[in-house]
Image (cartoon, rainbow, N blue to C red; front, side, top):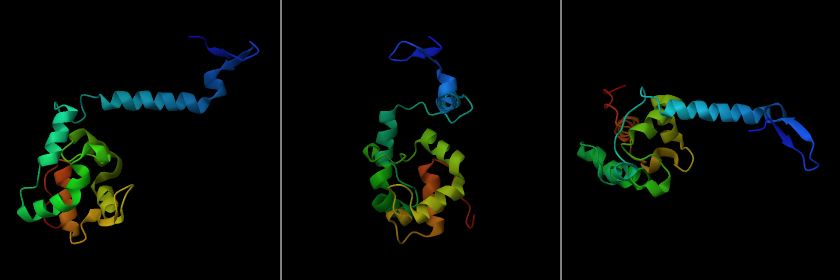
Length: 148
């Protein structure tokens, strides 16, 4: 691949990396993140995208009260791959969010809204403890201890 680009007049215009350093940095970052996503140390899930989507459409928390709240508020978006929200139980999708934002960041997003998700995630009667449990359920994480 040539290291310079010809202008319309046929003259060399210099290295792309020199001319567009942000482009070189962006490509490098994308490659790094792509390789990191394939890391064997990351969360593993052998299911196909279709299997994850099917599971997200049907899974519910074990606690019947939490299951009712989840079914009427969270499942609409987190159980349908067409909505763009991370799917319930999608280990890889939630691991990225936990790494980027942490449990507290995800809680704040739920309380205050984030992107297309409205404040309180359409569950005005959910307590902070409910939200912590729902986030853990969505992310396939252990349920938090009371008060944590």
